[in-house]
Length: 112
Length: 114
Image (cartoon, rainbow over all chains, first blue to last red; front, side, top):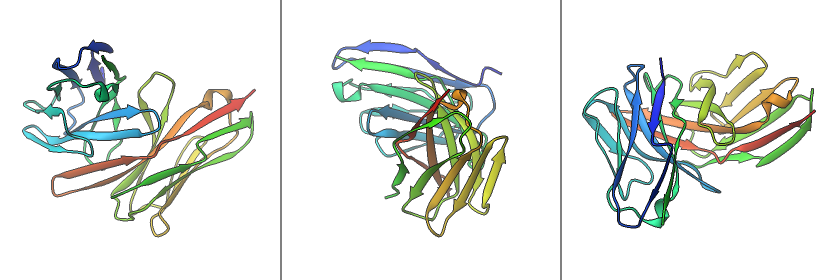
């Protein structure tokens, strides 16, 4: 098992550009979620999914879109990048809401 | 709104010492609580998960306890080693009826001095 795979590892964008952060898991996990980690703020939940076709907002969803067309993939889309979206982004998955979370290795995003 | 606090923010101990990390939360209506370890530049690794109906979980030199009524959890590390140096985070999970909300503390940065 590869676990949770995030791509790319690093990305630099200009303000206003759009992009998609990829997240894939090969553990047949139903629950998937996206977080951003900022100095002094800790990890904050952006969006989550409790199964294919089902997504919902977390604490800081503005400026981000998600979809879950398959169990394996949960991409995060930045619609129009802003400098405030400079952060490290993590994707995580769990078999159920009673099981341990598995995290990807993260994407470091800089928006200039 | 759930708030999770971890004290201290940083801790430095000599090798071999036993230590306790603290996590407190404001809303006791949680589903479970997890403790994670994060090494610099890496993702998080789940160490222990405690269901809301449980009082503690153990894995090797780690023991985590949960007291929902007081809104507290502790992570006990026995006989600390330099390899334990990392940031430790706790997260509380509230789930049900299609909702899945996780709230993280800001972490405790642990340094174990040889």
